[in-house]
Each structure stands twice: as structure tokens, then as C-alpha cells.
Image (tube, rainbow, N blue to C red; front, side, top):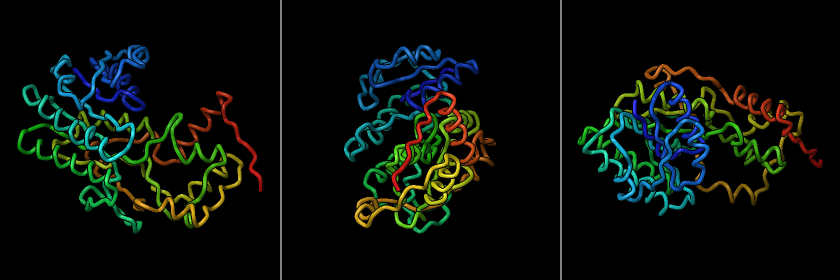
Length: 303
């Protein structure tokens, strides 16, 4: 297959490398030529362009059999979200109209689920987030679903949970630096997915995903923040982090969700088998990787 990856970064680069290994011809688009050497080293043909600019899309050497849009916002504000996700997706839909791919995969986020009561959510659960940026993601999904129905774009939406893996995992990194705090009573539920599993799931979606369908991309075990830190503490031989103060809790509470995201459709329809079914396997691999590299620096905490 001739494959285009839009957003060839933390996930897109290993995705492209794996597709090359499987014998596909892969093109990777970044906003600038920065990092071109590592893209080419992975066997990916490097492209520079911005999906918010139609003239940049016009220069891309299509057509493509598979297209993966995983471009991310760099600043994280509402205006940037509207430009990158919403307008960028509209540009892509128009650009692909003349030569539609066999499959178009878009990586959305589980943040579109606004539930705060710890309930289980699946793909048919309401998407009514309170966050303005998440509302933009919901609107982007609607635009893609309309294109799938009215313009026959073979779009598949992946709602991706918090990504962790080599050099990534916000709470884990904070914990290693003794900067982590347990919010509230630690009851908030965390939903995660290892980067390597996300790569495998995207490929499964390209091969087997149904057009116009949505899949939650999350591992088998949503976990409370308290349980997560207790496991890390035991694994690393450190004290668990302290609980946050009332002031810290008040500052963090706004816009936070609390839900258990289910992955049954992903496993049933795409037939994907996880490399890291839970955070335990994934973070054990990361801890061992850091240890082998001599980079597992555990600072003693004052108590």
C-alpha cells in the first residue's frame, strides 16, 4: 500500500517504520523539515507541510491507499484546536475528494467523553465534554462522519486514551522527579494506552476498521490514580507521592473527567491483541528500559 502519515512524531514515526517493515511505501508529513534525518532513517519518505494550508496539501504527491491523520496541536488553545483539528480535517476531506483513499484513520481522544461519575463508557455513550478544546474534537468527528456518509470517505475514528511509553507518561515522569501529587482521595480513574499498542491498533484499523465507525483505544484496565501510584511505589521502592493540598486540588479540578473507557469493540471487531494489556506490563517494560540504560534515577524523598 501507498501510505501517508500526517503528523510523523512520537507515534507516527514508529508507525511508519512498522509499515515500512511490512513492505508498504510510506510518506510522513511534518510541519517543517526538522527531524527529517530520523524520518528517512526509518525508511519513510519525508514531506514538509501544514494541513491548515490548502496549498501545502496540493503539493503532496498523491494518491494514497491509506491515510492516517494524527497531527496534533502544539499550543493547546481553542483557536489552535479549531485550526489544526477542525479546519485541517475539512481541508483534508476536500483534498482527498478527487482521489479518495481506501481507508482514512483519524486519531481523536477519549476526552470527548465528559463523564465525571466514574461510570463505564463505550463508543455509543454520550459525548458532551465541558472542555472547549474537547468540544472542537467532537465537532471534528462530526465533520468526518458526515464525509463518510455523504462523500463516501472511508473514515475510521480512534478515540485514544492517555499515551505512555518510552520517555512519555506525565504522572510517571512527575513521580520520578518527586513532583507528583495525589489529587483528592486518589479516586479519579486514569485510562491509558502504550505507544506500541497504539501503533498496532492503527495498523489493525487500516486493515480491518469499518468505514464510519468509532473505536475506543485504551488498554484492559482503567486504574485509579491512588492504585497507580501505589503500584509504582512498590515497583520502584519509593514512598507514594503525598496528597495534594486543597489549593492544588481546586486548581486542577476544572475540566477533569472521571470514567472507565471500554475497549470491547476494538478487540471484537479489529481482533487486536495487546502487547501491554495493562499499565503494569507497559510500565514494567519502561522501568527495565531505563534501568538497562542506567537512567533510572530514583531520588530519595524528604519525609
